[in-house]
Length: 250
Image (cartoon, rainbow, N blue to C red):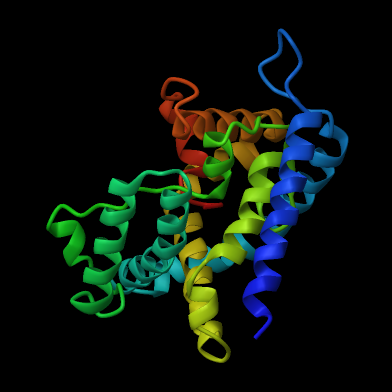
């Protein structure tokens, strides 16, 4: 009975935290970004690359090699479909009602006619997803980008988007509907999507992680260019850097 009020209170606390950290760590005048945690970020990225070497990279290669492409596509479709309800909530918070209607219609069509999102009849009919998240909601509400971070389990982000990701988990309507043990299956589907993304973008990610002179700078610049483009803060980034985090950490 107290689950919803407790989650609402958590959303308020996290939003307040987002306002604090974003407000206290704005990019300095004359700089393109704020990176006051570079030492810590480099340490986390080193751990991320080590984990990629030991686990994510070989598992994703095995997944991409042994799981047929239609099955991988279907599982990715399901994962994408599961993300839509949280996007609808953010559309409403941003007062983008047209996007909210479109994402809702896409979810309904693919959940029913698409067998839980396994297939994409909505996309074939022109109902594409309008991607958004609570980090974008905070941007629309006027919160600054804050400092650049590399967070364990998340990857490159900013203080604003780090809080946004936490709030998205709380706001997701499916979190109230799909409970254990069914929620274990949804978690598994989302994990397979990460394997598929790592396999799909293997050459670009390998180039950044293992062949660049300074992986930290490459990853940071690629992420910030992509994110700022998504939020309408800059022009489209170079294609060579854009693909690095196209889907890997989304």
